[in-house]
Length: 274
Image 1 (cartoon, rainbow, N blue to C red):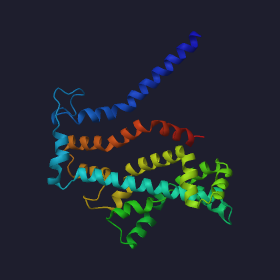
Image 2 (image 1 turned 90 degrees about the horizontal axis):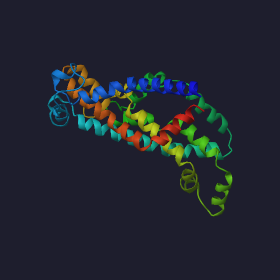
Image 3 (image 1 turned 180 degrees about the vertical axis):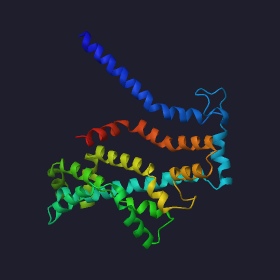
Image 4 (image 1 turned 60 degrees about the horizontal axis):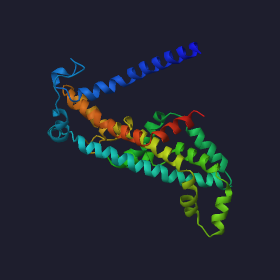
């Protein structure tokens, strides 16, 4: 018993130390965003706090053609639109793949799984050529259209629908229900846990998306916050304080979402390892 207790104490101590090491960069970034410039790299605990860096982000950055607040709203707009689209189309496409028998259905589902095996960066060049041919460069559509559907979302919803007995669908059809009514009034309420997971992970992936917006958008007024911060650092590297303040703003939605949906987040992580 003593050995077991000792092992548990050592294990928990190691995990706490690792957690502190992992969270230290964010804590330093958050505290440093309130430091005066000459203490950012000097002291961990500041002797004086200031809101000048955040004032710069909110009021002064437009003079340098860096609309941080607009970029933040751009990120919100793009992430919300893509998330709603993925949830909607995943719910629709998953229905025939899971509940209807038709020629090629299994092949289509296997192709969706096959597509998930390839990393996204492999498709950047052909996707860029397509967006350029459609004259969508430097537009919001260039950042939204390629992500309107998700193979992973379709796969998750298909698997969730398969777990629902067909008796629910047959009963709804007897009552005269149409296909869309069955999907949104019968199936989705029964798999709302999976729907929330798809929406949560989609929002996080789009919010943190950096490479693709960097390639297709050059207008500062249309950039998401992550890309605008990178361009700001490239040209104004000496403005360390505002850069840290902008980075804190970039992380706030993720922290809020995790606090609100932490149960769904942990459930999604566990599902991905099954």
